[in-house]
Image (cartoon, rainbow, N blue to C red):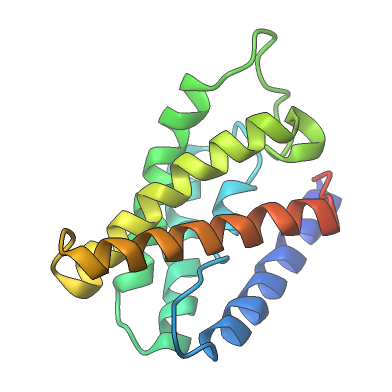
Length: 164
């Protein structure tokens, strides 16, 4: 249990640092920070996941100077996570306390899981940030944000291959 807490704390800090570096990219927003919420262990109490997501989102809001935007997006992802996990549950079920990673559940499963939740996150952020979701160029930018964010999340899984 202690190693699980340590692994998630290290991931928490590491992803905030990466997100801060990505903030420096002026032309487009790329979001990797939701990965922390995606990789929380299966079986955590939903209320705890929502609370952790809220405070994690607030820490991202401090860097972006966007009070509440990323906190709300983090909570939206954390709220949708149990539904997505239930829909995608493997035949044998999930191993309690294990993180839903590429290592534990396979690459295809992880790409689908993270793809669904990152799509939800991107729609949430873009809708709140731009207050207009369906205009020609904005849809292309929205798709680019989604694609680049998902690509970085999958790349993270291959580079760091977290087991916890």
